[in-house]
Length: 311
Image 1 (tube, helix red, strand yellow):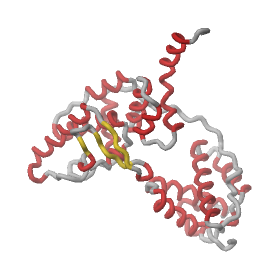
Image 2 (cartoon, one colour):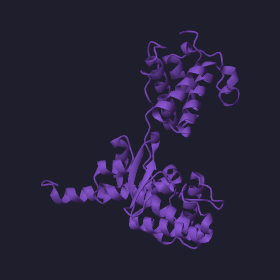
Image 3 (cartoon, helix red, strand yellow):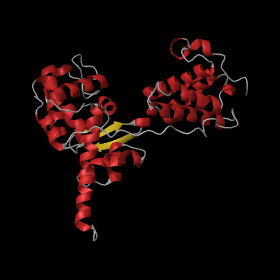
Image 4 (cartoon, helix red, strand yellow):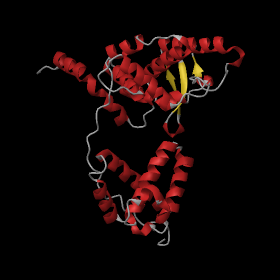
């Protein structure tokens, strides 16, 4: 046990996350960075985590105990936000839980280390008027204009993540019934309804694309394409959202995720069931969905004032 080295164990852990839990490349990269940073701290040279990882090959699993982990969190304090520190600690806990499951360590040294308290920021969202103003002002002219209109309408109508929208293929569309099939976190599929506006916008975009390209129009593959007929990236979609938000003069920073926040907030504010919204968003935990109830306070207070006998 004492001869086990950290770096190979970290790589084996990441492989298990990819194979067994279907974690995305982005999540795996974050886990690797966090655990390599811990390894560099254990070596006494935190700066090696960036460009000199090869110098950490001799660091052993047995070198990491609760005291070292607390020292690592102290080192991170002031260099990272509390939310980032909490995420790193969660990665360390998960890693050592994996090692304990394999009987490679006797106990999890991170289990008794307290997570730094931090206040979760409220999600950025648009009011219904702001959202409608933005969507109604998109000039659906030309192929790119029609595409951008369809992107914005679908983001708001389905509340999908930007990665789910970018990964949407033609075979995932059921415009007749107003349904799309998306691949969410952990490679979990779910079916999401979309409204008439989004369906019409997607149909108009694909019809215009077919009319322009003729026989060269790809029948399958990605729904949203760039000028070279390749799949539109998440970064490109974010640029589309940002461009129209700026054109509308919105006061809050608007990202594709703000559309998702707005979708959830507007449904809950209109009285939608919390668990139904959880299913639509693809959240594993109900507490994640509950973050969106913040704007419903006015409606709750109104109901309280009307119904409570001793208000």
